[in-house]
Image (tube, rainbow, N blue to C red; front, side):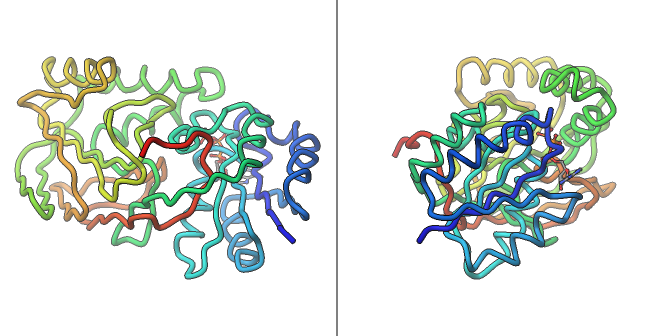
Length: 298
Ligand SMILES: Nc1ncnc2c1ncn2[C@@H]1O[C@H](COP(=O)(O)OP(=O)(O)OP(=O)(O)O)[C@@H](O)[C@H]1O
């Protein structure tokens, strides 16, 4: 007897999951003996529901955008007994669902879920008790996503992300950064520190061309100066899928990272804000079991 629970944010994106809910449920019922649908009503609601039912379900499906996925993966990651998780994308960018190779059209994604291809996925963890699947950052990245909130996300979608990034590049304030990993120590001026797990940010593959969600390590990018050279090398790396190469950038892998900044910097953790440096980050290899759309290359 298999029991799947769909925890769905009906307000996500353009409400596409909400409108397709009857079809989604019917299709899920062809692959699971029992399907329970729980519609969230406010932030925090989905996390409580997940903790309530987790031990009693064979699969949790997170239906919504990156905010919903972040909330549910945080709830799930803190549990001792963790059922597998699938993502049914329904927001604007749906970054982690892309990293998992999920289709963006709801029923096509449900069909992938029915194939039940399970894979162990790394999760990033901060000493402040937060987990991240996509990225963790300070500096430029926080201003970029702040700007998207202020603009019409509905209207511009993920293009807003990149308009806003370019807009912010030139007047980015630098800060004093100190980082220490198992291999690398750096102390100096920086305008951004970005730590990636998945390779998608803002709906496209950017910053981390070779980042894998199952390699047991974090990809770390430091922009020391937002010069023409560093911007050009990042743009080129999106096109060529090679690591960015510039004297104004640093790029390395880490399993553990201690970070402090002066003045203290606001953190963007998978798009969620409100916490500040200093902090320690680590990777939890294979912490979650997730359904994938395509078989990720070995
Ligand atoms: N019924 C609801 N009404 C409003 N907000 C909700 C509801 N249920 C959950 N939320 C909260 O809304 C936030 C944003 O949700 P989500 O990311 O799914 O949608 P989105 O913002 O439209 O998508 P994206 O982040 O991809 O743009 C989440 O933090 C979630 O907790």
